[in-house]
Length: 319
Length: 271
Image 1 (cartoon, chains in turn brown, yellow):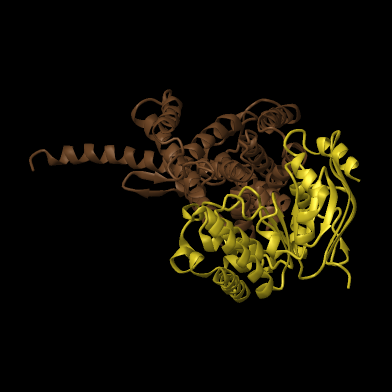
Image 2 (cartoon, chains in turn yellow, cyan; image 1 turned 180 degrees about the horizontal axis):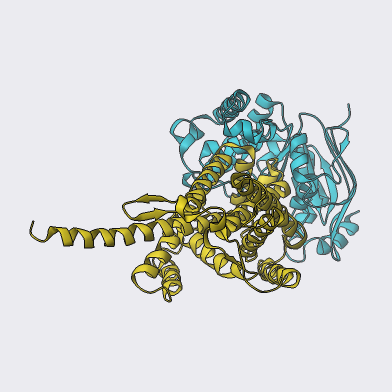
């Protein structure tokens, strides 16, 4: 074909942008999905929108940051990088998981039989407590993981001008492993079955011998741990963290949970990916300033067209 | 022989309202006992204190062990299961899943074993499956075969009631508490239910305590009828005796307006 050379170069550049955007979308989508899962699971068992959930993600990011500093800082690490990453994720997962359990125990459990507005307001309060505690303890300035110092960009995979950074691969692999693990946990184990029974009817579940308190605590632990790990991974992938990052991330994850169908585990995963992709494509192709607008417009559109979300079940009529 | 369930001076108040008033009651092993009483007499509250939802004053003993201070799931674990007046099925789950949900309490496999499908987890899963099918089998064609995998919300009202009983039995209950099992049923269904309850006792050796609003289903079925009014036992005896008891007649006649308050002076007059 005449002039094919120039045409194909132009085409490839377009393809590069497309694939790069796709990769960014999948990475952010995985992080949103991990946060959305906690939102959705907690909503499932308690019918509570845990607005403090985004801030647990922020706490996870801070734990990861201090782990890097503990081991000598990003430019002078005293332990091997893989060990550091595993350490960060395990500590952030356990630490934030424990924090989630403590929040449930002391803030939500006393209100379990209160009108639903009470725990909702409490959740907003917990969110402020977490944000402002971090502000008081560590200051309000932005910190940087500086992950490229120990996971260089040049270790990226280069395919035809498309760069996939090792951190992006870590995020996707860890997210997929965690989501697969969660699916198995929910479908196969006693905890998962108890969780589904409690989500369906707490009182009836209790009468069938389900330990409701323990099931709810476990749900908070697992949801919070995933948010903590997501916080570490977002620090690695995007660098900047501060005490307020939990707010927007939490709001987007909430959007993801609602779009996918709140209370549904596959819904939270798909919703997270949809929101991540929507955000990255609107940044690349429309305007990065309007990407949040487009994401929340998607939320409104979902509420209009399919209020129960993609995987949500329409409410049953009780006879 | 000591009774299976014993209530000793059980009282419970909600604020100023005395829901249960120094209640003494006992149910012997393998008996079918019915609790009747007008609205607000404390029948469902009685079930709620036995199953640990409310913590009353006094003592409740099941098989010689006190139930006071135990959480509901532990009481279920000891062998007390119940159904609800308003049905509480897991409507989105299938018929079989509903029953299976009640049998997992006895499983011991750890999360790791379950996720990796190790031998113990697989064996327990087979046992749960077999037990669910066995319990459902007792209920005949209505809850079998193609019904196994239907979601509970497609079932008819009477079948939902049956499924709730099946689910309670699957916990391995030694004592079954049925809260108005015949509510909303038509006469033929009530007759079938009576046979079902009788059959449950024969098949599973279970002791049954049931709540009815009126003397109805239980009149031919029960060994003992206990009449509650205003949180107190006002009469206890064989069905035939109870239906002639003047105090009971008064309690029901007086229940039209201000419940027991109106009945009390009348009662005093009769004695």
